[in-house]
Image (cartoon, rainbow, N blue to C red; front, side, top):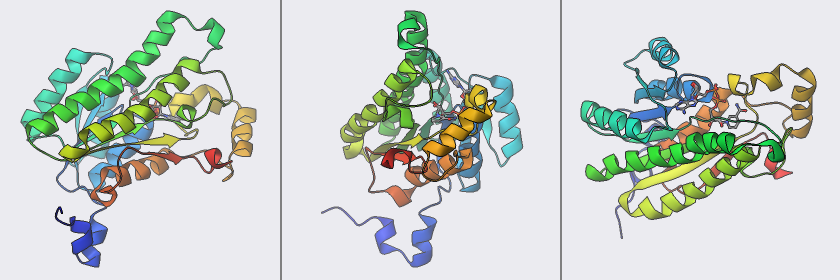
Length: 267
Ligand code: NAD
């Protein structure tokens, strides 16, 4: 039988500290904005050494400066395998390892399926699916090389668990569904190494990602009507779920996707 985890043996105060990630090195893709930014700031407050990885270099620098506390910015396009290998390797050497990856960079090209071109389809797959895999694979290589437990949390979507929504979004829905099953498969494959892999599935979140939708009050009202809790999510609410899954408090949770959806999928 393996040793009991710290959360089962420590005092009440110790059990509460399992929600913190003090001293852990955390990489957050798409960390310059929205959910990624909310996660980066919460992680920094929870004690982590945070690296914001984003293809928008200027926004990443601004975000790191705003968060402060040693948060660092690196330019990275998750569709670029060589760049992922290079950037992760440098961070591993500089920070002495990688403990947490938040696979959060994402993109969407919303169009009726019959109008979606192969170029658009491939562009969405390259970021949301292949990019998420390459980042997870590369982070795990570093964790394994250092015989280090770790946690990976991906930002999927309710659109990975539903074919519905307000508009046709075939490539996005396909990739987010893939991320959810990739989460299961990687969790099973890496469990023996102590690497946990989970995902969150947010509903519509108030970020620039859905700016065209936010600009149409009738669509916002439609989402509110479709959601049992009667509102959209805020990025901070998704970040809270990501922190939980990344933290030792979720030490017995792997292979799962946690909807942050105000009850959307419960209907
Ligand atoms: P956002 O636009 O505020 O932030 C996305 C960030 O990712 C930006 O900083 C952008 O520069 C970066 N990015 C985009 N492509 C990248 C790439 N190839 N490499 C590196 N960085 C890249 O959007 P957000 O709403 O915070 O989205 C974050 C994640 O949440 C995405 O995966 C998205 O699919 C998912 N999500 C969003 C919603 C929503 O309604 N906003 C709902 C469910 C899931």
